[in-house]
Length: 445
Figure (cartoon, helix red, strand yellow):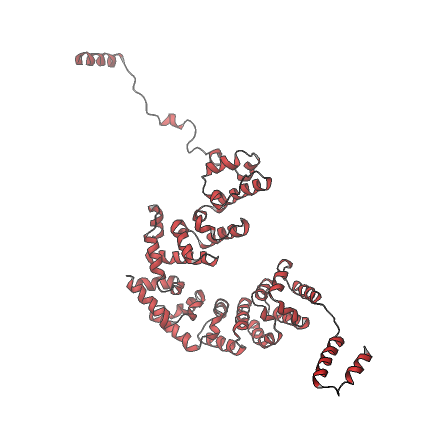
């Protein structure tokens, strides 16, 4: 190796093109091959695993981010150490790196380390806010100066630390909103009747309003409410009750009310839906549609599901989310199945969906099903029909499915023999009564 190096050094009199070729060859020979591509991948995977990455998702993460293999492992470890020093929980740290691997750039984190550490020590921002700020700034290239200016403006408006953290966590885009626009939002809210004492609560509940244009969205939205026949007091009451009302798109509330007017359901359900007013009912429809769209349904199918299964409007969002997660994660169905079987969202999860799925899953493992049972075949049959088809022929499924309501002993409302005490006394028939009836019949003859 030393002789080759001397030969390369003495070739300075050669033409420049030949010298460049020889220099590139010498660099390949002189550079020790410390790690192969595969070995570096293993080392990077071990490093990420030490900082909390689950082994099951590492291969997929590395395959999507091959550029990390070209980075220095020492710099990557320094970056992970900086993120841990910011008191970000392990689960949030893994989520941050998975969603935005660019935060592992050491030069980026060195700029943000001091400002975020200072705010974190004084309790100004929470760990979730730090995560959101890092993710947002790494994507659009915002510097710490914007962050410091934003925190100063929010604190000067009288917002407490929890509100500042809430705004930065839920809407990190506030870093790009200037002070004039923020004050304009406050004046708009005061103009529609929101008390200044409630402004901080309003931003705490719905910080995304800071990113909505006042002239382009908020004022036209209020005009739309007025054209629909709602009074200023009604609009003020609904906005004060639920600030997310201002997140409605133009034309969205009329579409939700039109859906309610065309519902084909029992009168009891319809009365329950509009019990708190048409405005609130329309907004509840919007929340359910957004929930379904969040899991992958297009808006047209989401409206179709709500229209076919109106009971969804009466259910809590958390209950709907549990059913969808059980459908996709446990049962293995796609979210689009709800467009064909919206009745799935209308049945009880623990009492009907889970027992039926457990029975079908058991029979599938035992080979007791002649064909595949889809979501429709799982939900549509009545309790009696499902029991007779899949439970009654298989005694071992009785324990899985549980007791049927017909087999459950119903406690009597009254003690035994009470009917004897409540029975009215019978009149005794005397000989005189018999004689009178005979005389009456003979007179008719």
